[in-house]
Length: 472
Image 1 (cartoon, rainbow, N blue to C red):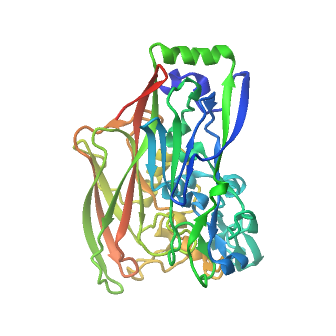
Image 2: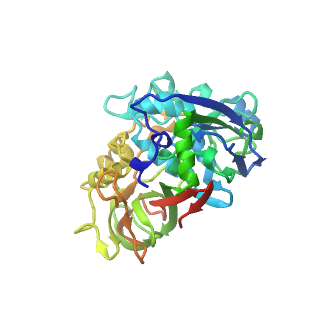
Image 3: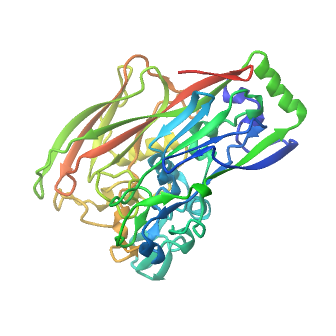
């Protein structure tokens, strides 16, 4: 059953026709909770609204850093950086699973407009990520003055209400919607009332132990005792909306489930991780080329898209682990799908790479060019080291850290395999997708690179007699 054949009430979009609906709001406590994992069981009631929200908090263990207001969430991901993986189950069957959630969330948020980031995202997830014109120097960039608090033209900080503190009762609470947490719920609302099996949500949490930073909490100054963080188990809640429409609408869904069954298609995410090894030993002004070929786990799947997120392993005092680092010399790459080479020649232009990602994400990326790649900062005629023309204002400090650390944090690339906008994906028959890439390492860019491939593919399940029959 295609999305257009689904009952309208199961599709989370604004309705063009009026319907009578009763909304039952419930605050759901976890059935199992620890510092590593939290699990909830949903009530078998109504239709689960995709806008329902997870509420949680994270806290530094260092009292002095907390009292000084030095602790904040990674700017790009906010509270999503605290979540490692999300699993949605019906009984023992896995409906949806996503790994490395924090990076995925941070990169998908790149299409949100400046207004969305400031008035919605920042309020909910605590990530202060808007970049705009520097208040200190014309023509340069810095954290937006409307999002951060500037005490003067060169000193910015996260607003107090989005900082994290040691107290578990005085801290701000942050939240994410189910549509953010579970990709399938961006296009499908679950008819819990017609499901016999218990539907559960499992969230596995990121751990930040001393002396680590950049996983859950960032610091303006190095803490005196420990960088470790902890979660308030009492603050974990789901704020759920169960929708109940007119009796004929609900009976129509139940009758279909109890007779022939209701087939439901939805997107799911699989991940493949790999590393590109740098040749190292590069002297100033020199470069060293390499060629790498990697398999992307996808055989037997109907793939909609692939998104590539990469980092160089270096610490980032503002974005933490939740960024995708651009190489100084942009990579050249191609894809091979079912023995078909996607591009006649390897993709070399970062504008083309960005355009492909915008097709995948469905909207223009709302990040400046200097956040996407290093092209505008490089002058290879001067030398091949790159980054001679920094466009972020070095004199503007955000939480005591240089604004230039935000440069090139959104270099996401990918491949759109849908047959037209919103169309079906491509069947990957027997062999995994191949990713072929030429890298140019330079004096300022000779670290190994860690890559994550997020493969969005189509799955389906049949809800028949109240029981879920899941595809592979």
